[in-house]
Every structure is written in C-alpha cells, then in structure tokens.
Length: 379
Image (cartoon, rainbow, N blue to C red):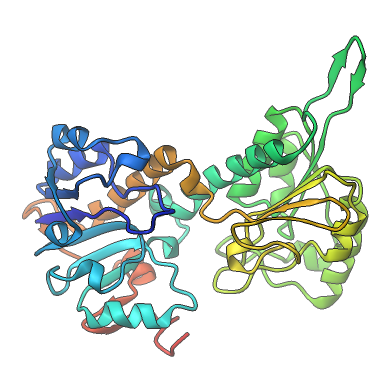
C-alpha cells in the first residue's frame, strides 16, 4: 500500500498533510510513504525528518502519486495533480466542494475516490477527524492576534503613573469552535469580551469562558440549532430584531470578530455598512467568513479595508494556514484517524467500507461519477 503526500502547489498554502509523527504511524500500518521534496518546509519540517520517520523523498508530484493507493493533500487537487495514481485511489483533502462542481467532475473523470474532510459528520467516533474544528481553533486564535496587531491601542487595562488605560471591548459574533477560541484568547489578553450566536446552547459556553452573552432570546432563538449542532437559517423577523440589538452593541466595541458560517450557503451578513459607520475611528473588524462572502458588508478577501470613518476591516484568507506548523500537526492527525478506518489491519491494504457512515458522508466521487447526493444534481 502506497501513501503519497505531494507538496501543495498554491504558493499561499503553508500547510502539509503529514508530519513525521503521522508518517511513523502510517508506516506502522504497513504503508510505504512517499513525500515530495520540500513538502513540509513551510511548516518547519525538513525532508530529513520525514526520512527519519520512515518516508521516501521523491523529486516531484508525479513521482509521489505514481501508482499511489492513497493521496493526502491539504487543498483539493486538479486532475493533473493526481495523474498517475491508481484507478480507485483514495484522494483525501479539504475539498471545498460547494460551488466547484466542475472541479469535482474532473476528479471523477480521473477515476479516483475523492473524500472531503470538511464533510466529516460531527459524531463521537469522528471527533478526532474533525478538520473544521482543528483548523477553526487556530483561526479563532489568530483572528484575535491579528485584531490586536491592527488595533492602535493596548488590549488590557493598565495602571500607569500617567493614568489608567481602559481595556478594549471585543465582540465575537458566532460561537462555534473559532468563536470560542477567539473568546478564550481575548480573555487571556484581558479584554472585556461579549459574544453572540443564534444557538441557545452556546450561551452557557460563552459565560463559562468569562464573557457576556448578547442575543434576542425569544422562542425562535430556543429552536435555532440543527440536530448536527449547526445554526439554522433564522426568519427575517428574528434577523431584524437581532440586527437592532447588534447595531446598538457594536457602536461601543473596539474590536469585532465575525465567524458565522452556514454549511453550503453564503455567509450571513451580520455587520452592515451602517454598523461600521457607528464604530469609533481606529476600531477593528476581523471577518473570518470573508472567503464565503463575508459577515461584514464591507470586507474583501485578502484585504484590509479602511472605512470612511477610520474603521479597519480585515478579510483574512486561509487564516489557519498562517500558522502552518500548528495547523499541519492537527490536520495530519485528523487525516491519520480517518485513514485508520480505511485500512484492513490484517492485509495492511486499502479496504474502504462503502457503507460506513464516515465514508458515505465524505465521499464525493467514485467509479467515474459524483457519489455524494448533495452534488449529483450539479449543486
């Protein structure tokens, strides 16, 4: 069984799909592991560390994937990136499938079985495979650090001989994994932290981290979470009430970090241009949903926009990838946990159980066609 880890070909991507720790475990599962030279350099992993863990270093992507049974990547590959892999090979990555049906069809035509790690179901046995959570933790942390760097003042309260400096007020919008980590990081920086989310279960989590919960807590709010733990789309009436509450609160905030996403849909707009105009000059907004359309009306992917009234609106792309060493360590472990379910421990070969709920949830392509029901209709 051959497992290939090519280098990522996006120059902005610093992560890698394997670490020496996970390579050693893959070799222990009976695999030959091929890694393209330099694949781990941006994550601080030189080739010799992979060699010491049991991997073979090869000079190119083509050499890595040739006859591979499993190909591990961070980002979705093109068909050219996996040319030479076995028919039926498992290609596992963060596939970003929504809105990219042509790319999925290209993978299907290549004859591989493509798996999207971000579609992993949120069930107990898949917790160690939850790439959204592992990368969102890093994104939430980094968002606060970025905001602090852009903010022209200190975050904590300071008592000095020249007088007292008030602590910064930080508002976290969306209390998923990224939001919770942002709250925890902001609290460690001694900010005054408030947070909001449409899911009632998050209130206790917010309070437990020492922040104050802000939301319209009506009957619709009490039913605003899916069985899978995601936020439901709220009614126009609720959105209006929540927007009014948010608008009055944002006006007094120094830093706002938005993290709200709905799987398979554009990010909801939470911060309007009028709300931005109500903030003080020098305030900062970090929009973690900017790659999905943005939670802030004025944010732009990969840019820091300064509003007419002097508010900085940061639109970071691939924010987890900006801490590649840590992000890679977690992502590689997510992949390892999933791979262990795909390998027969007796024959030490790829043995995908097609009726496994993890496989059914993440499988995008098989036998030359689209396998996932969400994309079979061209969605």
